Image 1 (tube, rainbow, N blue to C red):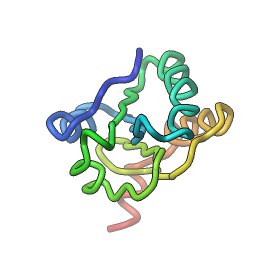
Image 2 (cartoon, one colour; image 1 turned 180 degrees about the horizontal axis):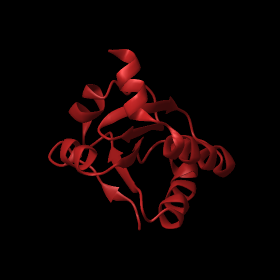
Image 3 (cartoon, helix red, strand yellow; image 1 turned 135 degrees about the horizontal axis):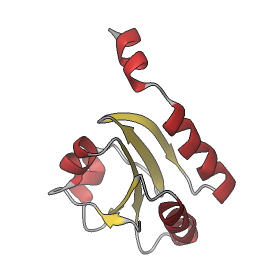
Image 4 (cartoon, helix red, strand yellow; image 1 turned 30 degrees about the vertical axis):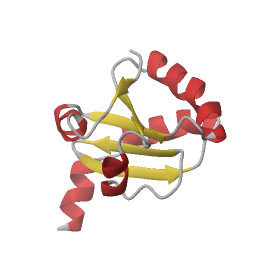
Length: 116
């Protein structure tokens, strides 16, 4: 599955309706963003059971601000509606693969229970 464009209109519903959602916050003028894009797209194709979304921070400035994105690219991961990963900077393919595996293995229910 390829990446989907996320906007203020579909961001929350996408995060809530899918078990795992990765979000890449980027901009067209950002060199590291352009370098990360094919790596992210390849991961999306490889992991068709997960949702990979992209937010163009120039077009969705309010969404980026609401997500507290201060530098790009920023990668976020949501599991069962909860933010479980957020990191600025372009990741090489092996590091992205590690993040994907870690998010898959992360027990968000246990983490929520422990936080209560």
